[in-house]
Image (cartoon, rainbow, N blue to C red; front, side):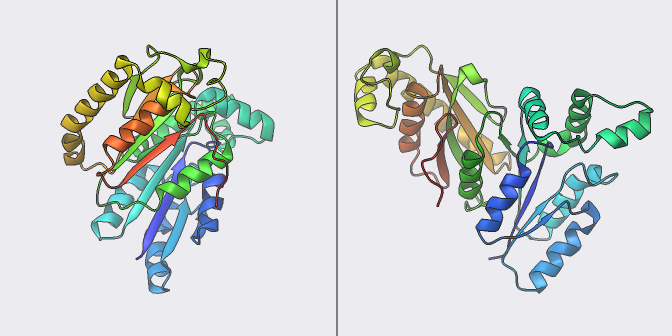
Length: 291
């Protein structure tokens, strides 16, 4: 089946990592494609018999980015399965990445020509967010702040295989000490639950390990919050599905993102195992391997 993935988002958020992962999955990839060529490229790829293609488009396409949402809508209206993944990160992470790479922001030269003075990195990032806001608000977002490249690769690999005909339900654990992920649609705080961290035998483990699961399951508060979240999602998930969205991310947070949030996310995924497609992922835990 013909499948197109469009990678876009904030500069420095990991688009090159995502494109490389798609290449490894057999996608024919084009980076920095001008918006006006997107429709023709997809048509040619289909005519050439390609089954999987991926395109990266961002602010390096001058003067055309505002047209991208309409172009995407037109392509989808013609029946082409176009999956858009929007990558972003917080300002602190972006500035750190630019400092490490020593690269200029792609908008720096353009803004300098327009205003007559060299803009700061913060000004470039803010302007880019403004340009991309209409696209971000209507597509699936991955917040790559504090996310190792191997974690992003795993998430991209997992994301592009799901069926767009139904809402992808994702349960995601995270650490409040690192901030709430901006890609979350619903956020639940479980920091009030008993904490296995204070048990020296459980501290090195995670919420996916049986000793931690057994320890947490003995507390009524743990089962009650899982029941309450389950009831909430069961009630409102049909309304999210009516909203024509393709993704719903439920974020569960505890202090360190290691024990309580991981356990609750895993248990919720079990409760909703009949829903397809469904994913569970953990921001603070790097996958052991990526095959």
